Image (cartoon, rainbow, N blue to C red; front, side, top):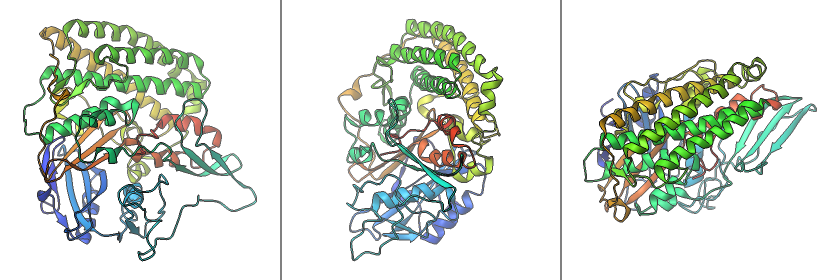
Length: 522
């Protein structure tokens, strides 16, 4: 397969000219053959618009993760405004192809359910696949919701406006009695054109834009972005061990805070209020630890290419270590209450099941995928240079049952693992007795980036694989910046989990995934 793909490590640059440009049939065959291996899965599929002088209007890029090689396999093909859909043969690509049709007006002919994900006009070319000029081929407009016929069927519409501060998203349930036969999810109510704002970058605003793409994953986005910049930069120095320690601690604090919040909310959804109340308070402790290191509770503006804006000293490390050990004791008690309560567990077990084979077909990632028995974790599968050797002794935590309980259990076990990682790194940092100096060079200037190149940067965010792909033009500016949030690959998993479930179980199924609306709407 050497002539079909180029192999790329995480956060390293490759020249665009080195990426195989296959004819469409060879491209499709290469994807189908490569993904037969259990160790491989689709990371991203996206389009870049070509200059007018190019042989084809667009280049379609596919990126496959190969965890045995700890690398990505990259290939491409040229397409016009139509090409035969890949989704019938590789269902992981269904949402990717719908997004391409939405963003570029490109029709994947024969797609099994071609409709927009977000229902907003493309910024790339001014129209989407359902709004073509009269002289262009028209794709059948499939914008209506799926419906069921029958006197006993009924439809339940939820959102896009929800109670409290929940982000807007629309859920349409097709039911017979209390049983859900189909759930359709519509997004796109918070579109900010993040990828458009990044074009012709990087600028000093680029990192801020990415850190605010999804507020609960600011650290993960910052790591992916700064790692891409490092890969494309002419500066080839590696992050120091102390810097990798700080990066890892911040990433794991972000994971812990969100897992704690989710487990507390899940307890609330089954009306188990003790754990809900405790976790609400405890989550704030971890956010405050992040603020101690970053100056704010979201962890923004702290990570920089090759360094840190504030650094970390031994006194801070000692404070965080003692603080985290104290809070973890409270957390263990709060979670033990939930996982020892039969009436609460009864609501979670055998509810919202996504079997392993279905999870693989959908392409589930992160804790949701691991809860269905898929042993993928970017922390070990695709080591990120910015994190050093922090995860050398770590292995993916899995459970095969695929239900709400399993998704809760994975979070519970990952909390234990994340604490152990943080404790070990802090103890080593304190033992060495050397502070990490602040780095300010990149606050006022950006490095020159390699021209006509691509960098793939994947971080295991708390929901799963967060993919950033930066492509530069002949001037070393961003010609395309593609972000694939883990939620993008997991939303259909939630829809699947509701099949044949009672509609009253939607809140706990939804919370067991807890997917991002804004992170998907880019």
